[in-house]
Amino acid sequence: MPDFELADKKHIGRRVVLHPGTDRWMRGDRYGEIKGLGNSREYVDTFTKEKYFTRPYLVLMDKSGQKIRVHPANLNFIEEDTNA
Image (cartoon, rainbow, N blue to C red; front, top):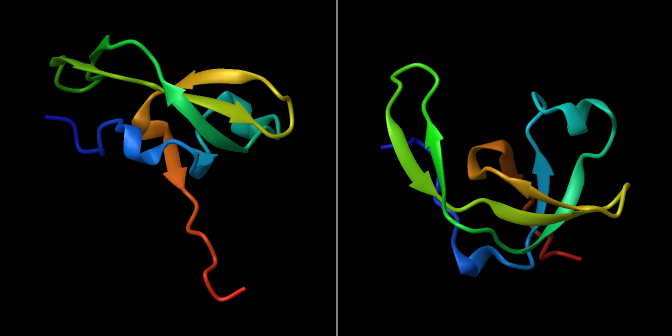
C-alpha cells in the first residue's frame, strides 16, 4: 500500500503546494487550490513495481491559471492560519 493519503472529497477547496521535485514547482507554478478529483488511474510504484489504483486531484494553479491532474503524493496541504 502506498505511504501517502489517498485522494478524498473532503480536501476539495483546500490550498496546496506542489512537491519541490515536480517540473511545475521548478518553473514557479507552486501553489493552487484543489477543485475536484480525477478518474481512478493505475500507478506503478517505482521501486517495488507494485500496481495500485488511486484518484488524482484536480488542482487549479495560481500562477498559470491551469487546472492540472496531480498524484496525491506530489501535494502538500497548506495549513490555514486561524489566528488572523
